Image 1 (cartoon, rainbow over the protein chains, first blue to last red):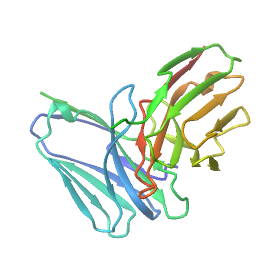
Image 2 (image 1 turned 45 degrees about the horizontal axis):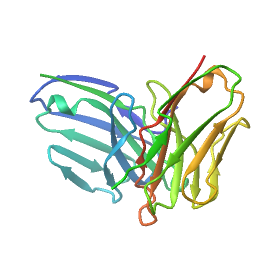
Image 3 (image 1 turned 90 degrees about the vertical axis):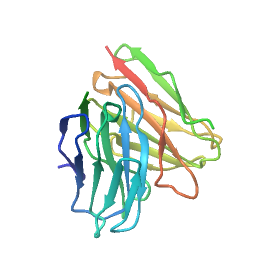
Length: 112
Length: 114
């Protein structure tokens, strides 16, 4: 059983469309991170959220941390082909110090 | 501003051989982490160091795996008597003292055991 469930696992959309990726758990996290990973490379940190209900915006990307700090979402507006990649959510459990627990990822493909 | 670096980027080895990977963290980051990622999965935690002290090891880290960070700077991960199941991407990350949950990853070392 995955501690962090990401959905959808795969997403293929046309340029200009909006999309939302979800990251859910039954556990409480002290912080939650979103990463993007390209093939053959390490994950690149996009954002960190630490406060329940927190919303952060990064250009066309909007990140939200659930009020209970058990879930998060990533919304992309007007997706572009350059947004293509594997999006990973990762969290630090309140009980596990600084080790990160990752979801399985959402593979996003934005077609021109 | 230098990021996390890992060497080698790719390693092909025969089953039963020993391999060693190196990670150089972002300077002044006191915490260093090792993760393993297999195809289609998110990274899985292996171990982490605060300065030179190894503070936590996952149950994934069998007796054949050992990690060191002798002077609190770079780290090495050694796998002895490699098995085909060890084939994976080995990722290193570091985090600053002020934000231990903000982990910055290196490009990884892709290990293939034949």
